[in-house]
Length: 263
Image (cartoon, rainbow, N blue to C red; front, side, top):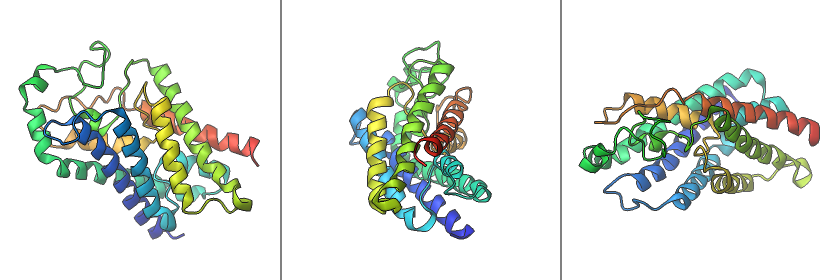
């Protein structure tokens, strides 16, 4: 595939992924949203459908990595040229930022109503996704719409959680190539990957919010930091390295494990 194919597919696919994934977080979180308090099941299935849509859109163009951890795993496995990796990563980050910006555009009125609500302001500085004020005293009230955060802030545990969850994701993607005589699953692979993401969210997402994708967290966190949101609070940059490093380690482990165990 050409460089333009990679750029277009990964940018659009990742933008749609983050738009729909961040959108369900906004729908569940923000006051004056019809889906307010719909809960964790809505979020996990929303992210699964987001992966399904993004992967289906980009699959025939760029291969629909949509995730640097997947790109890294595929490069180690040998299915992606190392020379293409920077373009994949840059396109994915751009797409994630575009998707996060579109979430704000879609829910602009709800963001304003939420962030000027007296009850929300009285709850600061604690992020509604945190249970320990000492752990993250400056996290903003809508940061969870854009990025992940741990329920218990222990960086070693948080990184390990992201590593384990990402190994499951990337290994599930890599082993699709073993099906149908090595021809893979075709478009069915997008559905399988989406269901794996739902499963990870339900089973492993509780501790950290399962970023399992560096740009899924970093791109929207950048957008949160620059958007003109009133009373938005901190973007919690002290935690931002965890959902980048953890998934990258997980993707690398999955690629190496695949080469050892399945080739």
